[in-house]
Image 1 (cartoon, rainbow, N blue to C red):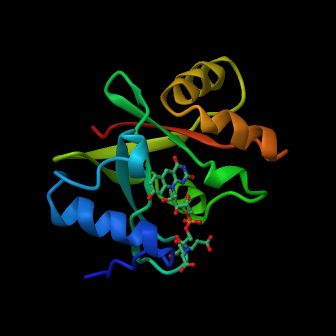
Image 2 (image 1 turned 180 degrees about the vertical axis):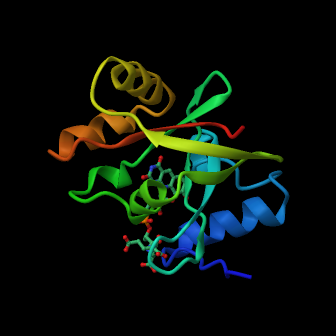
Length: 145
Ligand code: F42
């Protein structure tokens, strides 16, 4: 059984522990913002380990928009590479867990539409994009067949 390796960032690992430990009853928002958070379980492409980055919940119908912002840092978050290598993820949204497929949405009309939805859900994404000349990647997660 491949092991889960928690984030080296304590506040992130703690949020996952609280979220999962409470079966999605607690730890489901971003600190005091009250904004909803999902957990995107994916497989490390180098280690094969289970990784569980929490992300802001951005919904497009029954799909989720995953924004690889990492606070506008110059580099993509490492989970970006995992999703590119293996598009199967589990998304925990509160008490529900969905088995989903992700695909990166290239620049263009669809990405613009999803970006607008993401910024409405979490306005700091716009500032993050201003901070970096990296085009912040956007994935769309839909229920796996
Ligand atoms: N991050 C976002 O990018 N967008 C969000 O909307 C977002 C919201 C959010 C809400 C709550 C919360 O607690 C955190 C939130 N975060 C958000 C932060 C997010 O959860 C991640 O911590 C952040 O995006 C950084 O992701 P990361 O994958 O770069 O994390 C690093 C710190 C990490 O976990 N590193 C591991 C390590 O041991 O150093 C390795 C992780 C990994 O996936 N390794 C791969 C493997 O094979 O195991 C290899 C990856 C490679 O290419 O090297």
